[in-house]
Length: 267
Length: 336
Image (cartoon, rainbow over all chains, first blue to last red):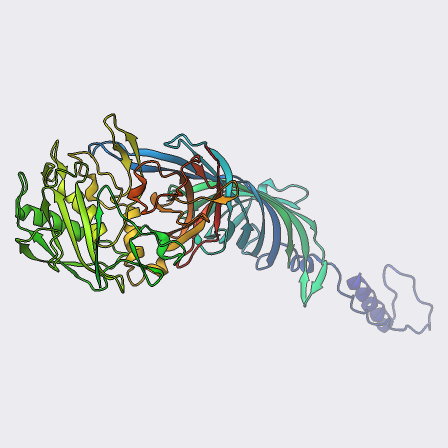
């Protein structure tokens, strides 16, 4: 629009100087004074594609923050048999005093994460999770025939801190690009505080799995402390988590499924 | 003022430390009543000096006796959590239980003690509870062996020496074992998990040469190394039956992470117990009546020891903290 107005002004001005009318317009009556049109005013900024891209959620070098509710699946802690030395030759098998095994019960938890978008499809993130699983203990095979039992022997306070990456699978996007599946993995540190808060076990935690994010809103939502929240979305994922060197009866690694669902903010 | 007290392998005279000091009650030890309070018997100065009698018996020379005794002392000295030490002074013509001011280990012929493999006695300072002298005899009425793999029909000398030297340092008996009645009377060990169990393994068995977690815990409680109190923990609690405390119950703490079994007793009529020298962490607690050995192997006064209840497990862990005691655990047992 702007360019055409300028051209018409130039042509009219030229004709006024030259004394002839433009080829595509009426001739001005002889002797009519031709006034120069005012210079076109610059247009105000609009939602041009370049401007939208600079604030789009999930753009490279942007940040995201989220919180999720977790369902931490049950996990075995192994078994251990209490034994007595038999009054036989040295090669005799130990005498069972009683058997024991334990599991962490399924429990809810919470997780928060902070992510940095490296590329459109790759996000590195740090996560912190907390849960309080009960330890289900089963004792049996007592040497004197005492009744076996199963009980919740204690409740652990369990928190983990891990870091990893999330890779979105662009070709599987859905919902006009708002829905973006991903695969993810992480490694971190686990702390398990026993009941009474006097004894702690620590270990490593590894996880791998996948999920999807879905952007609910992509326009600026709110500005908090000078930081503009550019988008709100939901996220769900399912991972297999392995704990190594943490609390266990048998000194082995143990795994469980962890599902999470929550909100995340892009800014 | 000195006093002589005798402790034998089958009849152990034990003074309980009930209610005096919960920490000291963590393991069965010997005590003497002084001025209305009970003082733990223990050596005040280490290394403890000892002699070995020069007498030999069939199958074991004086030198072999010396070697077995030295290995047994070294085994106790190898407990990292305990600060015990002994020094062999030399062979002596004296016999054990001579009132000669020297701690002597050797053979004595005591066919009258037909169920006593060995015995330990003390001379103590009655004003302080300090052990002044302790002698050990091995009953030569039995057949003995020092063979590395044991010998059929002969009791392993090093195993019995290890047990008696536990008494020598002041440890009482452990009840961590299972027995069965013998047709001709007495009991036979089925299995045990403490060198300080009052009944020995059968002839030819050398398993008693190796200390168990219960033995190490007991010695570390009596003679703690400099860091032991900071690195180990204790589980405390009570055993009740029909709302009343149970006296003389055997309480076993099992650490499923390490497989260690460490035990103690309820030492008063409120049913209180304290098991120390534990690795920090959760423990499964098992409570049973003391029905696997003669009661006088554990208590001087056996009246009031309650045997009329069923073996019971605590439903929740006892969690031993590092350098401290657990929250009290209450175990309710069911009457038989």
